[in-house]
Every structure is written in C-alpha cells, then in structure tokens.
Image (cartoon, rainbow, N blue to C red; front, side):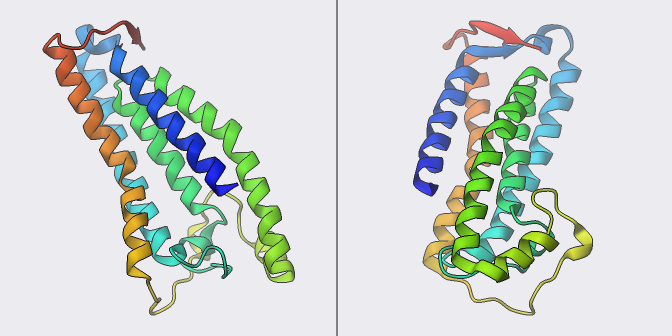
Length: 198
C-alpha cells in the first residue's frame, strides 16, 4: 500500500507542476495585492508543513514497520504526517496566487487520503492488536489535539533513514521554488500562460 501511495503521489506532483506550468492567476494583472497575500499564506503553510513533517520523521523514520509510535506528534493524532502533508498541499495551492487551486487540492486530498488512513488502520490493528486498539480509541484520527502532546526526554534517530525522510519533507519547499521559476518563465514570455484561475 505504501509503495502504491508513493507512486500516486509522484504522479500527482508531476500533474500539478504541469498545470502550474501553463496556468496563471486571474488576479495577477488587476489585484496583485491578492496574489501576494495568497502567496504569503502559502509560504506559511508550507513552512509549518515542512517543520511538522521533519518533526514526525524524528519519531517514525526507521520504526514505522516494527514499532507502534505513539509519542511526539503521534501522541496528538494518529496521522500527523498526513495532517502536515495536507497543510503543505494546500499551501502550494495558495502559493499559486489563486483560490481555485488550493480548493481543488484540498478536495482531492480529502477524497483520497481517508482510504489510505483506513487501510493503514487495518494493517496496524493486525500488527499491534490491543495496543493499537487502545491508541485508536484514545488519540484523534487526523486533527492534532495539543493537550495530548507527550514527548520523551530523548529518542533514538536512525540518521541514514532520517536523511531520506528529510528530503521527502522538503518536497513542498522545492515545489515553491519550481513555481517561482515557472513564474519567471511566464514573465519573460518563455513559457505561455494557457489559462487563468481565480
């Protein structure tokens, strides 16, 4: 399931970049203030998402298959990686200077990921039985609850695996960079804008 999800995510990112490559913001010409505000909102969400995914990776990198991780961000909700991924995905949408793209990305995310989460719940219940059942019943599924945060004084990190997770967490930042390059190509008339979003 994880390999399938990763492949779908990669295809989705390529499709997103292609859409952004030929799309512009309908507000760019008339209301540049709006596009600037939306871009700033996008940058804040991408920043939170990147830091959040790095934080999650400290706990789960190298342990996902064998251990039921319930500390740190996993004490606040059962799917913090997906929560931060949602913030990053919507943030990239806002960074496009439109409201249409973040709305579409949010919709796609909320349609697809509940199936992924349900499948992972079933797998974790099979692996960790009663321990996961207790965790399932006491920790929120998706929206973090700050009051439940529990962190150990120290945790063991597997550097080689964490390094790979670090690069995965930076995808949203790289997408912002790609978007800025595309915008420059649009401004230089090297790459045409075929359609505009609001």
